[in-house]
Length: 267
Image (tube, rainbow, N blue to C red):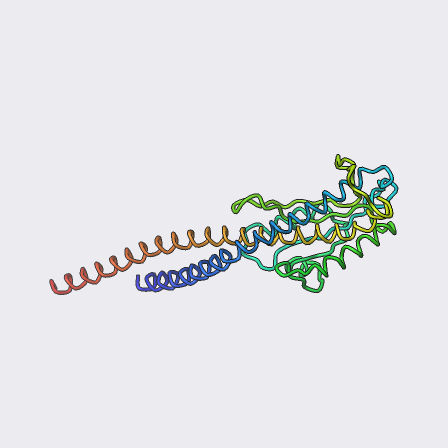
């Protein structure tokens, strides 16, 4: 009985330590959510402006001559993969890598510590990912696409639906498609629409990468907050259950001691 009490005491202490850790990580995630979502919204606004410009340009017949709109029959893929910087975020990282299994032969450009570690690349953190690096990736992607080194380019990232819901998806960017944009009678492009489109695509790709990184980081923080809240509730429930078991064990031990004393005094 004494061994059971000691074991329960050790387990309660261990779970209580875990509870303090999950609370601390939950508070850190909570403190980052506001900043992460603000940054995500700004990134979406920037990406939306770029997409609007590209959609406007691709509506012109002249722009169909660009290599960025050429339809290709091959299946060579290049994917930027954005995963988290840390674990303990529920299924956030697992969902990204599960989706990636559908593209086993793709060339991978990882962003985020977990993705870089998985593919043996130099670690690039998603939390403070710089635009300069996004532009460097975009320039390389555009160059390789025009040289025919791959047929399709996309970003494996996470979509922020709400604090409780995030989903992994692929944002396909190249080749460009005509997304129902309409020509503008007020827009004047110098020297011509095709030249402007070819010049703006690297900036468009870089902007989309940055926007996806910011949204994915917001998803990571939100997923960690939810996971830590859930883990904290489970830990507290376990402590309560172990506490009941501990009290019963102590009560049983005390009762046994009293019984032994009473029985001994009767002898």
